[in-house]
Length: 210
Image (cartoon, rainbow, N blue to C red; front, side, top):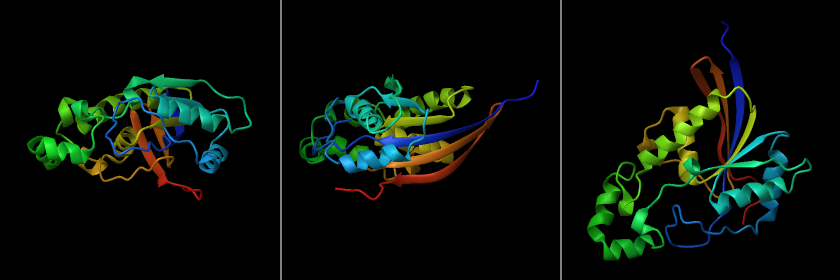
């Protein structure tokens, strides 16, 4: 039997900014959508008839919905995934890094010795988060539909997807800068069980910033 060849085009969008100095991880915090120009700029750059995937946290679903509302085509359903959530920081969530350093100095120092593998606040390591995200990504890559895919997610999962495409270690993934309302564009080329990746751009912040 002939193997099926598939090319998929990926737009990875980090949610709108969250205005706080606290660590929010998997907290369902609200985002700041005042940069309407940037939302419109992203909307113009997206393809017609794409499928939309999102973390189920509101800052991501609302980012996707607000971008869709600025497009001329009929809005598409936004499929939500808990696997796309940000890394959870456990008891550190809702606290600032300075508070943690002051009140839990030993745990704070230990975490930064290896932030990819260590677990902050009894939550989840970046490495574990990356594995749950890439498990989902592997399912998407092998689906025989959905040529154009828009993903609204957090910085951590976007780093994990880029790192998977580039075969980076989790430590190297953490060196990637992913700004709010940035766009990362990838292409995947799959034949049978083999997938190759092309990186078009990473962390494109566009021309309209605040």
